[in-house]
Image (cartoon, rainbow, N blue to C red):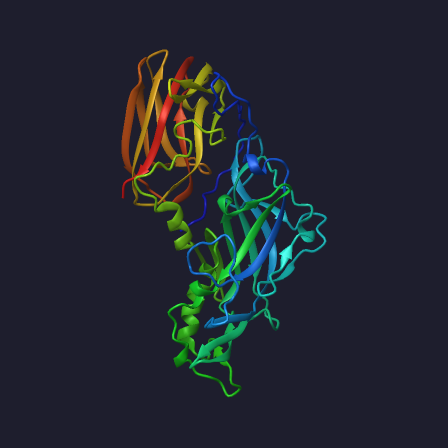
Length: 421
């Protein structure tokens, strides 16, 4: 499964007010994630997590009766990148992201980190600034497996017949691995965004029979290419997905690259049925999920008004521009899964009879994912419904309402995207 597709983002955006109140117009906002658009820095912590395989906000320490305990686990951090969608006149390859560490004056260029010591990185990241003219979606951390002692294996103890037996798990199958964390996995503080990189032990070893493992003459269970190979192969498959990232990439000892999502993290995001996955679909919350993008001589003003007991998005197109997508009302970060069946619903009307385009696509490549439909708009409210099947898995889908070409005022409400199966 490939990561986000390649495109060079070189576009200009006019971003106007959004929100809601009892008055017609609300306060303006800035482009980018509101919580990280203030030039926040980055910190990171690295830990071993003994909680169950379900997602937890904090890593759990090993209990006194833990069957499998990791004593030493170290790797080398080589790079940190940010990934996002851009609506500024900048040249960026979104597939590769932006390198935010090591930066030009970084005190170190690679950084050994210990998961068992619970390392916290602050000083080495002190000049990282996450304000990068983008709507931040992911942070990627890049590691290499060094071949020197204590970096080429995981050391620990496993309980066999009521007693702990030391083990060594060789990491020789891996050269490099990358973890990418979704913005919802960040912890935002007053001055920094913290990224917790946890290795989940139960995800790594649950269900394995270590009682049958061969113990070496030195009293150690060696798990590697030449000893306990079956256990080694299972642990190799589980190693990188045992981190609680959204997705991962690694290069094995043969130079082959494997790319995929961490299944339980992706499922927690996607397996939401019969519930609206468009945040603020009723426009009744004071947030920045919706925004206007204008281009190709399009111009528009956006506000939220109160209508009786509900709220309505109002888009006043003052210049229609050269195409329907000269004026767009956008909503990013809509997760969809390949093969999933969805229904899109919204109500729209205008001061003129016209046609607009509704579509779901990628916020990075802009390619259609599931549907693109012409919608006839009348002067009275009309509900539009469309069922579709997603073509690709995309945690960052983008809903587009293309409103350009003509001067008009549009009113939109009750926007829903529901996963049916």
